[in-house]
Amino acid sequence: MTTPPSGTEPPKPHPDAPAPGSALGTHYSGCFGCGVDHPTGLHISAFTPDGLSVEAEFVVGEPHQGAPLLAHGGVLATAMDEVIGMSVWLFRKPYVTGRLETDFLLPVPVGTTLHLRAWCNGISGRKAYLEAEGRIGAPDGPVAVRAAALFIEVEMEHFARHGDAEAITAEHHDFEVNP
Ligand SMILES: CCCCCCCCCCCC(=O)SCCNC(=O)CCNC(=O)[C@H](O)C(C)(C)COP(=O)(O)OP(=O)(O)OC[C@H]1O[C@@H](n2cnc3c(N)ncnc32)[C@H](O)[C@@H]1OP(=O)(O)O
Image 1 (cartoon, rainbow, N blue to C red):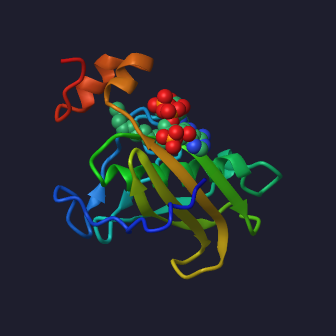
Image 2: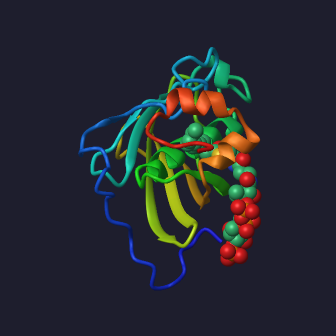
């Protein structure tokens, strides 16, 4: 379910994608994954090396523990969901996570810098097929976490109908919500 149908081409950068090397802002200041105003969130900040994929560093801290001095798997899955969500946002359409598969390959001690990377393998209709990995200590370090995801394209109206329309219009002036 997270593998693109055969024949699906890898996507090309959107004409309005950020330039290679650009930092990516938060999609919502209150987001648990990337929100700058979230009091206890992961505060992931990322950049795109090529307008197609996303890279970020996440330092595992004491608030992220499951077992003593080891990262909680759910926190790591959240970090993967976040960088994958950032990468699909590069295609300039709103998507939500439909399915997220996560493999935990190595324990991740508190104090570790996880080097995260997310990319898209293909888009077919409303479905985007994405992957991510988290490597310990360096961009070419050992892979500790791997994820595969199916994201589903929605209308901006999805967030207004199920969430907070005013917060969306306040932070997304480039989208028309509930015209
Ligand atoms: C302001 C900020 C902006 C930007 C905001 C960016 C936020 C990013 C945040 C990080 C990412 C998140 O955590 S997002 C939050 C977590 N996710 C959610 O809350 C999503 C909750 N689920 C839903 O709202 C819904 O189930 C949807 C939208 C995913 C799908 O509902 P729908 O629109 O009615 O469409 P539906 O017909 O059911 O599905 C469309 C196609 O996808 C397939 N499909 C759907 N779900 C799945 C699934 N889990 N596994 C496999 N396949 C699936 C269906 O079989 C179908 O295939 P076919 O029959 O066409 O072949």
